[in-house]
Amino acid sequence: MFAIFVSIPLVLTIIPLYEMLVESSIFPVGDRPGYETKQSEDMAFTTSTNNAPARDGNIAIKEEFDLAVEANTAEALQLFIQRHPEHPLAVEAKKVLENAIEGK
Image 1 (tube, rainbow, N blue to C red):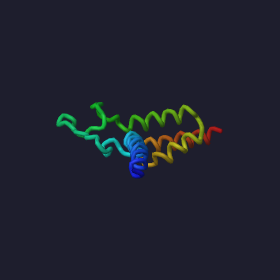
Image 2 (cartoon, rainbow, N blue to C red):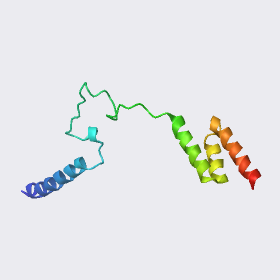
Image 3 (cartoon, one colour):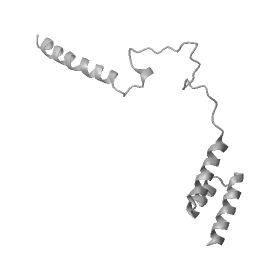
Image 4 (tube, rainbow, N blue to C red):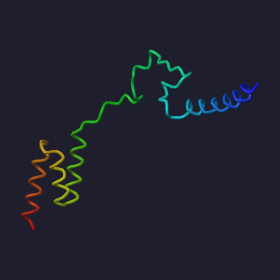
């Protein structure tokens, strides 16, 4: 009789704790007990539905160069040169920086 009085409250305590763990973010979505994740064949392991091609990295570097020149500070040009030392625009940034220093 004592076992019944101890067992019922114990079970009633464990079940909500288990459900709380299952619903929490402790388990990654696919690893949650009782949750099956199926991937259909038409989902080709993509992380995004955006099929646009990646943007050319040189465009972003050119924009960064333009912003550094527009800022018209030695710090901005030096930062650009540090970030892109091998890029052809780094040579241009060095020329702009030298001209700015000579022009003072």
